[in-house]
Amino acid sequence: MEENTYLTILRHALLARRFEERVIQLAMAGDLPASLHPGAGQELAQCAALAALRPDDPMFYGHRGSAYWIARGLPLDRILCDIACKEGGTNRGKGGVMHVVDPARGIMGESGTLGGNFVLGVGNALADQMLGRDAVTVIFFGDGTSNRGQFHEAANFAAVRKLPVIFFCENNGWAVSVSAKHSTAVENIADRAAGYAMPGVVVDGNDVDAVYDATRTAAERARAGHGPTLIEAKVERLLGHYIGDPLDYRSADEQEALKARDPLPVFVRHMVERGLVDAAGVKALEDEADALIEAGIATERAQPLAAPGAAFDAVYAA
Ligand SMILES: Cc1ncc(C[n+]2csc(CCOP(=O)(O)OP(=O)(O)O)c2C)c(N)n1
Image (cartoon, rainbow, N blue to C red):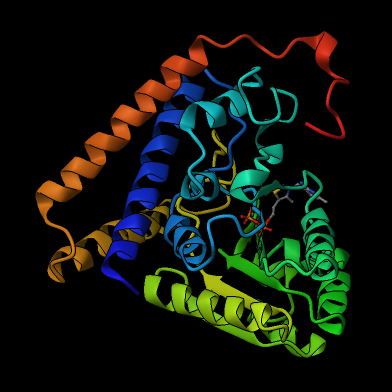
């Protein structure tokens, strides 16, 4: 990976982390709807995967966090307006964070009904294949969502048609308050790839190089017409499922241990040790992030709420 790519990943992951900390603060104070699922702990995997793709490759994002949109350059005020259901949102305040959409940036949306992403993403890849476009569709999802029937239908269809798809699972071991031990028969979600004759790759989601390389390989394979790959990144969900989650299903000791395993400071340390950034450079990135966040909040505050009368405008096309 080029040196610049490490810096890009760090910039995006740091911005996402600080942005979400501020969103949580605002939400807890009652100044913003608490509708975001915090992505803390998973940003590096998300940003490293996206860094290995083209900036406009179609992405069906997962519901956990803001790093997907940030890595694609979506301005923060637009994300905030989507959270706050305001006119300035990408869906004009009509869909909240599950329907952030900006096709020019390859942000194709999510499905509030988890599992919908699989069929939407595979349909998108089918269209690309039929139209002769060399795009690769990436579908992000959690371990819990991989138990939905759509995953299996979509995986089989993508493999049969050799569609240009990357199924990217972020396995954090939880679905809301249910541990994967109680919901999922396989140890590795990637093992399921064997059922659909596609490669299944397990990577440490905190290892930026491993995530980048696996995604790069999968994208090359897909673009060459050889079909889909299932990548599973093992990650940690550092916070609750939602903002305000009492987390009464995880012990205080477990929570503390998780904080100590936060991959972001570890990545920063590795970058400093390798001479890719110094303390002043990290501080500059943090300051830049904070300035962007405050400017985004100011812009969002000035926006009106979505007008109820516009509910049926532009439902099928922007
Ligand atoms: C079909 C459907 N069932 C249930 C929900 C409610 N729900 C939202 S997130 C979530 C947990 C998903 O777990 P996982 O896929 O592992 O992702 P994670 O939240 O851990 O990132 C559930 C059950 C939903 N949105 N859609």
